[in-house]
Length: 313
Picture 1: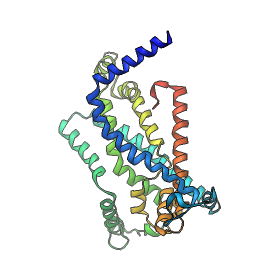
Picture 2: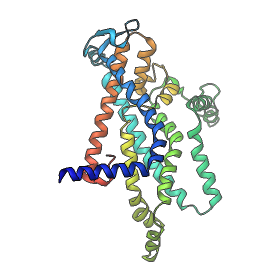
Picture 3: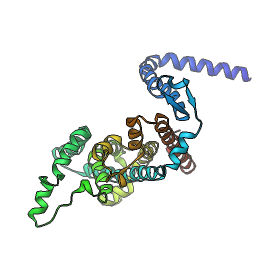
Picture 4: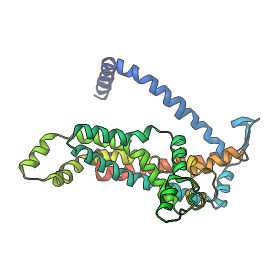
């Protein structure tokens, strides 16, 4: 009996493979890409446990065990870097999801097709602007001597503070700039989910006498929950990895701003660029990866207990 079931499974697999062979062939480039750029480099994680020497190579360098991790712990930076990375990414996820859903609902409720397309295009435009260009514009606007914002503040009799020598406002500025650049892309995802909602549900709500707000909270939002959970799980998987491009371009090596804006990615970059201890920077990178893996597994497990249909795996 067991042998017959096994034979039936093999025949079913062979039949599915034959019927979908074209799609499987199209999948090969993606599989090769993931193997080359995601799995093979994982072997380099061994550097975190070695005193890396360029002449000896990865496998010829001396083994030091957890010494590189001990340096991270005694440097008194690990907790601050982890806290900042987690706090910023959590703010990006929560605030970003709220704004993305809100704008998706607003765009969907717009009646003018021309205004809807224009508004959507302007929201999506910052996503295509690189952080190098964006930061150049931001620095021009916020320049302490001749910036546009400085001129406006002074015209009203105020005194502009040099934000590049003041750390306090940067947590808010970083969240604002991230939302400005990324909310448009997320809005498109939620907007596509909104447009896929069965229109008969809205018609039924109209028959029941529901107004626009009631339809949003009773029909639209509940139907967006599966998409919101999937997007949240995908974002949580990178919650200990900061947006390096944004932080590096906006903060860089400014010692004053690093008090409130230093994250793990910037620390790894500084360790690599200094070239003094490649093993310690590799240890910081491995530390990030382990935290991300543990976080996504934990959150996915919690979601599976609450609503199994919404999990990633």
